[in-house]
Length: 190
Image (cartoon, rainbow, N blue to C red; front, side):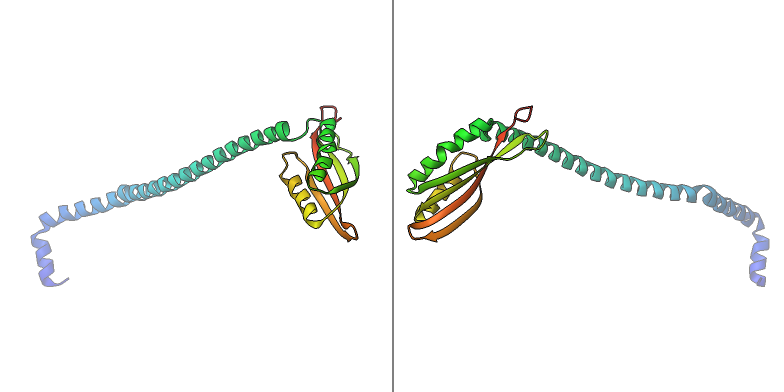
């Protein structure tokens, strides 16, 4: 030590010693108590931020789940309405729907109705629907055949066009059209 500094310490020893003890005590309290509490507080703040983010994510998931449930319920209602209001109630209703309607539609569009075959598809066990396929052969002009297809597609009856084959002939075009309709089955599958 320099002589000046040593002299200051010797003369102010009474004041400097309690200050040095107080400084050491403050440093010890800081290391033992204050610093760990500060680290713990910062960790709690990070956990709080993380918990808030997790809460926002859970709320979004809940909203998505509620939307999914309401969408599923709406789809179930629409499917039930489709089964009850659109599909024929049974095989005989499906036959009635197509037996007179298709020849009348052909006559309305000036198309000659030549032949029709009908087939009932084998249904799986525990199925809710049966399928009836119809193969029709029609003769007429191209525009009349187009009009027949348009009228068939825009009719309220649930008839699906599966396949269309158009062949040009001497008496006009020949149209072979494969149709199908579905019908509800009873509990015993008939």
